[in-house]
Length: 217
Image (cartoon, rainbow, N blue to C red; front, side, top):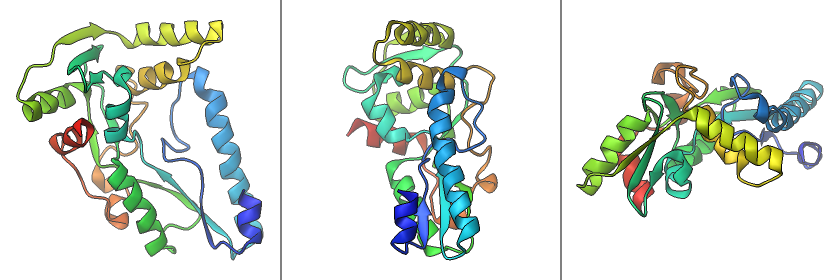
């Protein structure tokens, strides 16, 4: 695809990421998935080095948070039944960007091609944790959500069992275990807004209440 884009005269290629970028401290089981992305990033770098008219950008967005909360109850929030699973202490922070923010990040890259050329940009709508999201869900819905306690270790073991058995669903278990892995900081794109490119790209900060409201729709 990269070679085809270059041949067609595309001046800016957005590489496959919209995740954690090159610096993620991922779980070993997800290394093969990450390696596929790295290969595409390297291919883009090689083409840009050889052809100054071709440029690329990677966009690290962290968790696509409103979409993921709505779609995957494994993240700990069943928005239909309005129940919760809290992994470990529920305090592990991670970066998330809403679909609105992800779309704006692409617009921002194209609006400022010089500042975003041939590098990864980091965006975030929020840095949050499970406990903050639970409080937001309860405030927005005006009801208590029953809470079940679990651990990322148990989730990781479940994912490994599925992988060994050749069953589906193991990637989701691993990704969520990685997201909430206590004390590891695996899924933080930028510790602060100032350390991100959110302002450069026009990606606004969103509150936990705004995000869970989107997930509930």
